[in-house]
Image 1 (cartoon, rainbow, N blue to C red):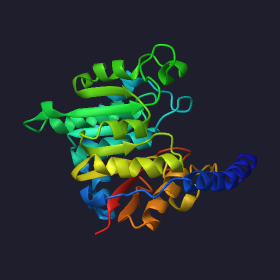
Image 2: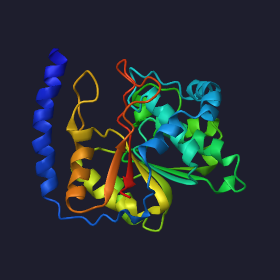
Image 3: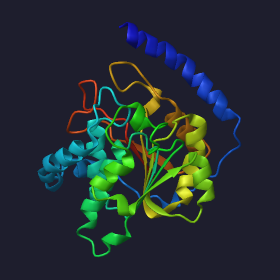
Length: 282
């Protein structure tokens, strides 16, 4: 109960702080015309796919044997979210993916594995490209998340072991600077899992929309609908919700589809996820 009350007190401070920081930014122009339109039924069918279910146990065992992440001790997406990422990428089969927020490379490993899996059935599987961006050098032998988390290998070494190094590029940069500087790069799927502040998300989303190919998608992590807790610990990361709500108030034709509950466990004895799809209103 004490931890839950502490989380409530922290959230009461976070919301006005995030809103105040966001209010200083000029209005952004978010053009969602490149976004694919998806429905909740579309998403539900992905996570109940019997074809993906049949191969999951073997694939996850192979990936986990390589990355060897202790989930209670290591930062990064939880096992249930990693599975959701794998299912989504397999089903959507994007050729070019941008990930903002490499961290220890757990999500990177599953995205790359799913891209390789989906690409095997395509004639041009050699055209796959995964770019993963972090403000810190994800593979630095000293000052990196994988090293401070006492993992055996760097994200780059894990990708090599998974056979995905040839189409994966690691970039050390601040997300907004990268999106502005690489204005010619186009992606089918962009996964926003960076610093999660309202100020950053509000700027990332319009820039990411400009980097999408036609019928592309943006995937959000740590999205808390209405800024309310998802788990029993009462914790909330308000930034993504606050930032996107401002874009919507300013007229952006955006819709957020929280993945809500998955058919498998995620964290804190639940199957709830903070993953959400950013799509276009029909």
